[in-house]
Length: 77
Image 1 (cartoon, rainbow, N blue to C red):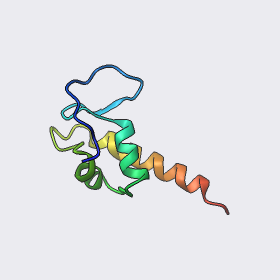
Image 2 (cartoon, one colour):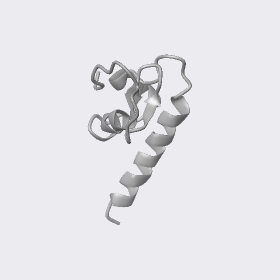
Image 3 (cartoon, rainbow, N blue to C red):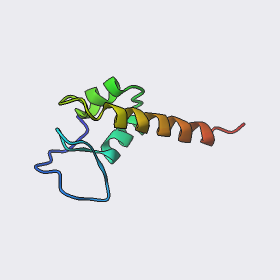
């Protein structure tokens, strides 16, 4: 898994996406950007996020959509 071992969800500028497993937004973004995650299931497989209570699935899907939109803006037309 991408996420490093975290013993607590301490405050940070890097928002916690998955509270159950303390997976931060930057870890999910890395799974998308570097490892090609395209679905929340891909993110879960790579980071563990979304494997607890499932309440973060919407946040993961939102980040996936934002990353897709960013990528489409970077493609030369």
